[in-house]
Length: 351
Image (cartoon, one colour):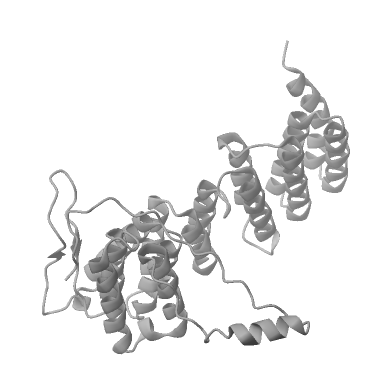
């Protein structure tokens, strides 16, 4: 005998899918909602999920984005009712529906946003499932929606995502535009998330792709890669490429500094970080911009346990008087984010 879920969903789908095929999408949509609501209320979650998924898929194939999106949203509601976890099957349904929704209008964005929000609740990643983010980022990149793909590839944080982001940024820059901002747009967010591997993968791939296609970016003062520290047998050499683009050089060195950070345990690396940032900020350019300074302050606190600069001097007496007369108490300082110190490295210095 076939399983109960297959039998139940098959009966429902026999009443729904022929309506789509015969050009009656509205009636099919209403029947799908009716069946799914009944199954959901009786806690037959798997049957409801099967009905909604197959109905939404066929409606989207028929070009009915509105109805397909509505059933996808219902599917996610049932996921929540069931307590569905993020796994290959539950994610796979969503990626199929996201692909079928198509790029026109706002339907796909609705499906993506709801899917990411569900995965953030149902999985161990507060920012959303990395595999789902990667799929969405890759899909949008291949369709040429670079700006929409960027936050998903950053949020994914996977090594493959970092490689893809570097490839996309290289395409975005093209043969003539300035690549300088893109080096920071990829490197700093990964570092702020504590993801050194993704940051290093991104900047290595981005610099490699840009200097390969535009050799004129390589500094004539140093045309071969510069080894950093001692080489380790069996591992890729740790090298940086000195270029004419200051953000390329800064981003490569910033990643290596963070890689060797040990919080407040390594005074030499803390001083190296301060010198690195001070040198490039004194030269002006993008590294001196306010938004970049703020990101670097976050990174300094996270990796080197360097507290952010105080916005204003503390005034304990004024705070006390304000509180006595009903004024708002001073805002509490946000909890400090500090990574656990890395194990000792064979390459303690950068300079």
